[in-house]
Length: 145
Image (cartoon, rainbow, N blue to C red):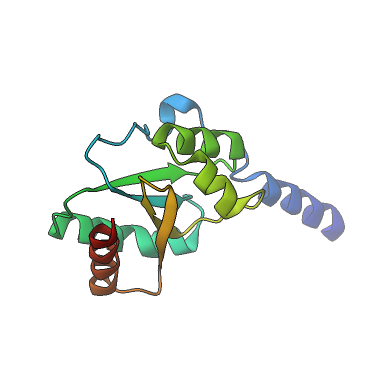
């Protein structure tokens, strides 16, 4: 009986988060504004612990600062749908950048600061950084672009 219960639990846990989120329910990703020099892209998933720690910090930094030439975007990987993730990256104009960053293994819980002229990742922000360090990383990226 325990074996059957364990197997059923494993199947249930494995299926959680696997269902595709309909496009209408995913956050809309739009083409960056023409004057955007740095794209701050959060690779996010609702099941990601690092995302849950980083997202509020990024939102607080974004609300408290006016970063000229910087635009923020989130690519949602909650459904674990790589095709949808890379489609959103293409919409942002950074499809190849993200493919070269991840390949077949998309990582969430990081904010990528991308120079839109060169399509290169300038730096990466993670959950270990406090709001001051995050703001400094974004400001430094904007100054380099």
